[in-house]
Length: 403
Image 1 (cartoon, one colour):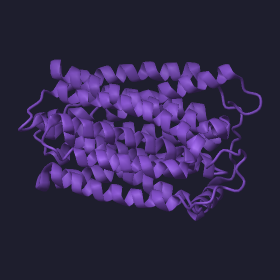
Image 2 (tube, one colour; image 1 turned 60 degrees about the vertical axis):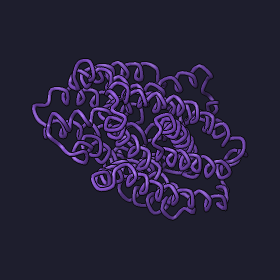
Image 3 (cartoon, helix red, strand yellow; image 1 turned 90 degrees about the horizontal axis):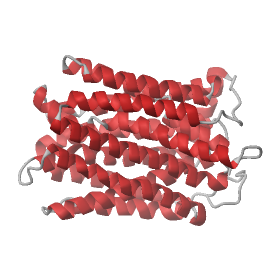
Image 4 (cartoon, helix red, strand yellow; image 1 turned 135 degrees about the vertical axis):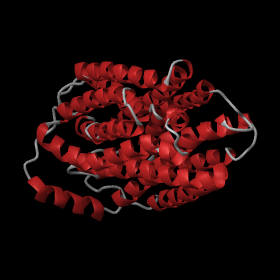
């Protein structure tokens, strides 16, 4: 429920708007993922080079998150998010018209930089406007929108590129992004609890020291790097594996693996409710263990087992991300936009750096090399999750729900 004066209809409008915002953001960001083999073919690229179409976008997003969070503390949440979605949609249309790979990468980098005004600001908006007892569910709904957008963006791009071209796929996604931005602007209520910050750079530096001095936040930032790096890397290169021998699947069929994101839509909300009831520290490590188990299943040579492994892996990732991101909102008592930006900065740095490193390993060790690296990273994430079980709740938390 909303704090104090906000109504239930406003709560519903917020959930709908943030669902559409997450949908548009992640559809635009990840629609190039199934197109990587086609980009590699058309522009004569290696798998590692084609992965730059995503890695540069996520890297630029990571850099812009901190800038956007500081600006949103002064300008307001809604304005930043609407501008981010509109600019990203326009950049996607321009990428469809790129004359060479350098122009496409430039458009994708600008897209990533623009989208820095969406994810962390959305998390801060929820942290300010939603009661702590309901924050897990609302954050889960937002992340389910992310999952749905990532799924639909990948699936539509794969189908359109199979029957038309990758340019048609990107153009269609850009138009869909503009429609999503309009719905987001129309539905999202103005902030009721936002207060502009006037502390300048000194306040930002103070917030950085406070967040990195917290007993739990730095570990949650590390988790975001590891979890997202593993998730994006697995989806980056599973397409190369299934398109090649011995499977030889069509582009549209490989794109269909994005339907597994439906599990993420369910698991993010399910995990949020479970964490609100049982406590985040008791649920987080179990769903990360599920993610690791799914990854190991993909080493099989049977297509059905590989798909099942990716399903378990996807379920575990969205559940883990839902819990970890809402935990950041609980622990950051001040400058929540900055804390969310730091979480997501590490999140997208993981996507960019681990995704690129897996491209190098793919060239030398194939899928087995990718899984070996990701398994090591997930093992480290599981250790952090077990360590966080001993973390004491924030003493000043305003609600009695377990943290």
